[in-house]
Image (cartoon, rainbow, N blue to C red):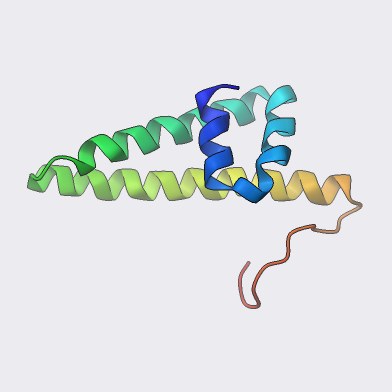
Length: 97
């Protein structure tokens, strides 16, 4: 399994089987997972540097990681609903999207 899919599975361990299934057939999903992995690595690198510029970059990459993770989660949610006749298998705390 490639590092992008592993990054997404680490981020959403309860959805890792779904993530792997989607990644097998969806090249753009795999690419999105790869982007997540690269953004996480960049965030880690910038987190080791103490400069003001590093703080700005950390903030940018932190936001990027969160956006990519939301996009991946959205794809997994939509696929799960489509495969289950429009019903979500994931229960969310009240008040969350």
